[in-house]
Amino acid sequence: MKLNLILIFIIPSIAIIASAQSEVRAEIYLDQPQAVTEERWQSSPSSPPMATDDPGTPGIHGYEINIISNCNRSSGSASCEKAIDLPIGIGERVQLRFSKNITSERTTGEPSLHGYGSSDVGVKWRFYDKNGLQMAVYPSFRFNDATRHQDADGNEISPDGRSIYLPLIISKDIGERYTVVSNVAYRSNLDYKENSSVFTSIALGRSFSQTSRGMIEIASEATSIARRTDVRIGWVKVIFPERSSKYQTSLFTSLGRSVGRTEDGKKHTTILFGINVTRKADQ
Image (cartoon, rainbow, N blue to C red; front, side, top):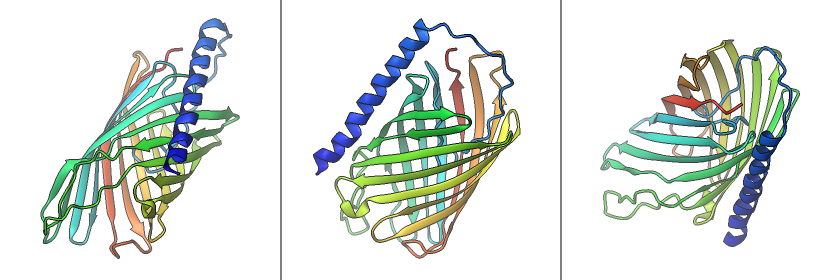
């Protein structure tokens, strides 16, 4: 069963990368006329700073560097993680991605925990892009390489385990200023089946200028024993536009709050902020 799930991740990933290489060759040998059109202001919700991901990719030879700080607070406990997220364009509609984080957790009456989180690698393919409607798949694999911790009694805390994440991402532009995005995903935990989960979200983004956009989302993740739903607002601001440069720098932030029941019976508040550096795709 575990081998089948791993093949479900590997086979589509190879097919997606092969498709990307075909796209690159097509760009080299096809001379297409360039239409002069007014660029639509970006309005799509995106991750980061939201949990909802969008179908966008960096494009051929484009890439992004996201440096993220994300904190989760509840009664009697707090956790923070610093992460680096690296999407790399390998085709007009395909990207590779790697992410890694450093975590810190404090709970009243227990020793603080510090260490590295699990590594993630993924491949995104935007397989449909027409008339403002975009669809993408984004299979990813999470390694079981996080720092091992012990509780106050010296017992090892169970790690997250290896997992495969299989999302479908759909977005639709609405008018000139709005974009709605929905994610539906299944995470299959290869080591702890009870930790497998279903993720669903819907988000709305609005452009306020050529360099700023706001967004709001409802995101929910459910396992066989628990569910958590968060409402989140976010903001992205370009501080160094790329009009005369191959590069663009943005700041982003979001604020979230859990609603309804949670596994630990507490209300959670999440605060995320970070910086993005983007290299524009080759034209």
